[in-house]
Image 1 (cartoon, rainbow, N blue to C red):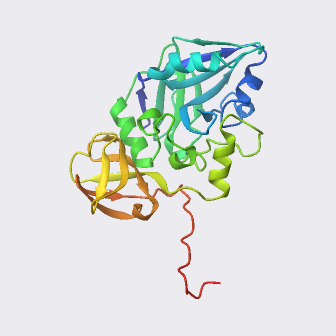
Image 2: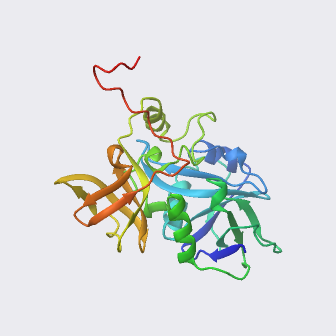
Image 3: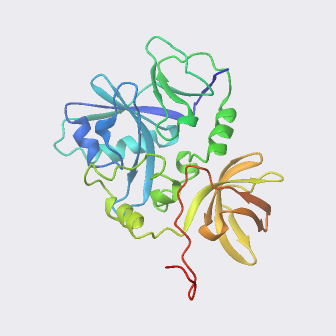
Length: 279
């Protein structure tokens, strides 16, 4: 049976005006022109230095673009985007639209409901936006567990504003970056990180025998910091770990964590040791 959960921690911004696509195209990490009825786009807004500020799902609906974003960030995001309008013919405003997620089956139908597959992973399910939403068959905690088991980041809970590099949080493999659309703010660092293989850590699913440490807790092993805890629910969570600690159990000062690399994640090939026969 399909599950549907209302997501009250999400909000929707509307960007309207004839320049709405070109306006966002030069700012965000993904190709805005790909947003279409029944097709959402996942994208991020970065600092000029290429560090994460916010992420959102983009929907094309009539003569406007809708941004499914964190409710706590909606006003700040609207202000940030508005600063870049210059002479562009666009408006950015908050709306009263609501957000839901559906998974484990087809989403429900509903008059006035805007529905698209979650563009990150097919297993993630569907995103829904509407003035009113269908009756929930699950709650927000059920959806949180669902996305944690898939290894999907959830905004600033998992990506630190002005600190996180997109590729650490899986934006490349999860269809959050376009490498062909042209320039966007923060593109230089994002591209350099990819092509030079500069990543030293990744955000990965972890589990523990008991409650996981609070978000932001440094994870220590043998007196050395190996990562940072991010979001969690009961025994499942996400943590940023150094590449050498991504597989199997990690003994930390907060107990043993079991790290797991999800099937969608691509990691760099191990470098051959000096003096090996590798050609």
